[in-house]
Length: 435
Ligand code: GLN
Image (cartoon, rainbow, N blue to C red):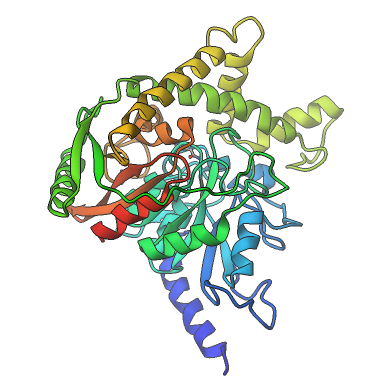
C-alpha cells in the first residue's frame, strides 16, 4: 500500500491552512519515521509538539532567537512514550518565547493566528499547538502548562486541553521555565483522544526525579463544586457560556454545589513571584558559551555573555529575568519569595477543603474569549491579571481540563474542571458528558 498520495494530500491540506494560521515552526511528517511503526494504541496517528519539548533531529527553539539554531540531540520521555505507542511527530509548533505569555505574540520566530478569526490570537503559550488541532492539521498536539499555557489556548481555539497532575508526566526534555509549576500535557479534538494520549504518555521516569506513578482512586463523579463568586469580572460571552454549562451539568444529573475560593485574589501575585524567580535561575544557563546565540564579535567573555543575552532574549523574557532576580535578591526574600510560598500553601488549603464535598471543581478558564493581536483588547499586564483561574491548578499541582463549552459571537469559549491529584479520570467523565 503506497502512502505517497496520502502524504501529499496531507501536506497540501496543512500548507493551505498554514499560510493563514502559522501554527508550525517546523513541519516534516517524514522525519524520524522508520519502516515499521510500533503496534500500539496510537499507531499511525500524527501529532505536533510544542517547540520547547525535545524531539531528536527536530529543532528546539523555544520560540527564541537564543536557540534559533539548536537541533535537539535527544527526545523527551513523554514524546518517546507516544512514539512507542505508534504515534508520529509531524512538526514543532509556535509558542511564546520560553512559554512566557498568553498570546503566542511573544514568539521571536513567527506569528500564529486563531483559526476561528485570523485577527485574533490563538492564546498562549501553546498557541501553535492549539491552532494546529483546531484547524484539523493534527488530531492532537503536546503543550506545556506552567500557568495555563495549555488550557487558555485550548479555550480560545475550541479544543480540549489537559494539564495533568504535577509529576505524572515526565518533564525530561521539557525546556525549564518554572520547574515547580509546569507539566507536559495534551491539546486534542475530543475527550477520547485526550485520555488515550495521557494514558500513553504518563508514568514515572528515572530521568525526572519529581516524576510519579499514576495512582487514581477510580471514583466516579457525582458532585461538582461550582465557583460562583469569580473574584473578577467575566466578559458577557464567558458569563453566558459559563451559565449555559451549569444548566447542562444540572440536566445531566450532577449535584452542583456552590463554592468560593477567597485566595483567588492572591493567585496571580504568588504565581508571578514564584514563576519569575524560578525562570531567572533556569534561564541563567543561556550565555552563548556552551550553547545559545553567540554574537559575531566580543572583546571578552563578559561582553560575549552580555551581547548573547541582549540579542538573544526578547523583552518579555528580559522583564521576567529581572523580576525574578529582584524577588530573590539577598535580604528581600522574606518580603517576596518566601511570602509567595506561604500564600501557595494557603491556596492549596483553600482548594483542598472542597474535595470532601465535591468530586471536581468548576471555574472559568479565562475572563474573555480570544483577544485581538497587539494590545488593543488586552495589554500584557491585563493578560497576566487574567491568569487567576488557570494558575491555581499549577500552584497546587492538581490536574485540570479545559473543555469547549459554547460558541459566542463566532468565538469558542471553554470551561475548566479541576480534580484532586491523580484524578484525571474524573475530568474525562465530566468532559465526555458535555461533548
Ligand atoms: N500566561 C502564563 C505566563 O505567561 C502562562 C505560562 C505557561 O503556562 N507557560 O506565565
